[in-house]
Length: 236
Picture (cartoon, rainbow, N blue to C red):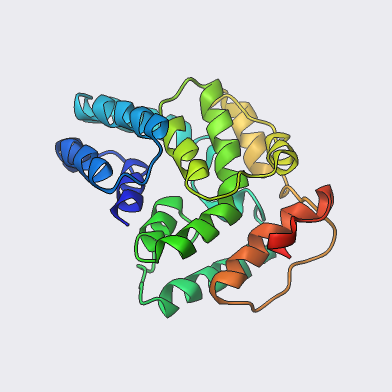
C-alpha cells in the first residue's frame, strides 16, 4: 500500500527531495483512499506545509520534535523497552520478520524506526498491515497526544495510523504511556535527565524470547497490556 510509503516519507528527515515530491504524495493518498476523509485532510495540511516550507526550518522543527524529545522518539521499542536488554532481542526479532518478508535493512538502521516499519507495512497485504498497526496503535496514539500538546501538524500522521486498524487502542494503555515525563525540548537539563532514566515498564516479568515473525512483534508490544488488565479476546 503506497499510503504507508507516503506516511513513511513524511516521518523521515525533511530534504529538498521531500519538498519537491509533496504534490505527488497528495496524489498517491487520493488514489488509494485508505485514509478516512478527516485524516486525509489533516495529513494533506502537513504535506502542503512541507511543500512551501524552507528546508532548514523544516529540519530544525523535525529535530526539536523527534531527535531531542525521548517521549517523541521515532523508535517503537523506546516506548516499550527503553534501554533494557529486552530491546536488543526485540530488535533481532523485528529484523528477522523483515528479512523473512524479503526486506533487507542497512546495517546502520534500527528495525524499530517508525518510517522503516511503515515501509515494511507497505509491502504487506492490507489485512496484515492493519493487524500490526493495531498492535502498535497505543504507541501512535500517545505520540499523537504529545504532538497535539505542541500544536504540531505531525500529529496528523499518528492519528492516521491509529485510524487505519479496525480497533481503537485501549485508553488505559495509552494513559500508561503518557505518564512518562514529557520534557520541553528547549530545557536541556530536563532532557538530559529524561534520557538517563530507566526504561518505562508496564508489567512484571520478562518477555518470551526468540519469537520471530508477526507474533514476535505482537508479543514484544503486547506486554504493556499485562499491567492494566487482560487483553481483549482477539489478542489472546
